[in-house]
Length: 380
Image (cartoon, rainbow, N blue to C red; front, side):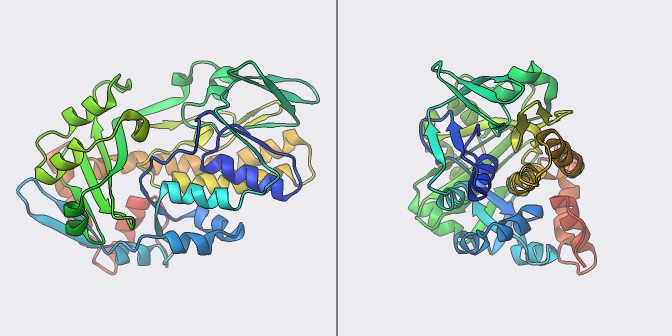
């Protein structure tokens, strides 16, 4: 296994629970603590129940009372979060991404050999085994390699070449971090508060440990990641009011900061020989689609079901791709459609979003607005 993110942990845990010997390789030196709030719904919700973590996720869920959008003039528009959850049939949890990862770590069988600081740089596929070559020159061989090493997958680059050929850049950068501010924590309460203007947004919410979490996104003309992400954040979100200024002033050092491109991965085939891809390495939908974590768990569970079904590996990988790729393609398209609502580019798009949010209160239109936001079919 390459990658100890949500997809990698899911696959590693499920394979080990079915008797497989699993080595989980993670390039980072330790578990990542950076992350942001996610709305966990869709196919991953049912998959979480299947693998026995749903009750734990409910314990970790943040009961968001409202999403409040604050305009530059101070006026605000609020959305009852209960309406959004109800329109999803009640199957929606607000979670910190790192809490979801921690839950998957908690159920990881002791037999899994987890190795941090172990970056896979290439794979050597043979007829009856495959070898992962690590950055330190060491080698590990096994029956398969599951590449769940994220949107910037080194394994994908090794097997298929230039990663840019498979990236669909959506013209945005995003960042997330946590910081201490008793004033803001008290002011936020249990609401998720976001700015409401064109081309950039900052969302703030209070966490149960007393800290404040920030999640932000802004449009960029050049999607290349900056050499100094902290400076890029300061420039992007300057002049957005005193609360945002305080949050930006408390931006941590880069090692405690999440900063990345907003992009999708469109990989035409998800396996080659004894190597198969999972999670963002092959199916990144971007934060605009809102279901990356959900799809990572559901897709990981499906992959394990295929691998352990008794058919040949090539057939198992083909079935996984045939069944799951159309789901991912649909969610990616929904994410691109949602771009103007997530981060409006023009005053007209901003107005349309405001009207759409107002319609959430409507018993009839609300389900269709929720469907447009989440990319799911309206619940009955």
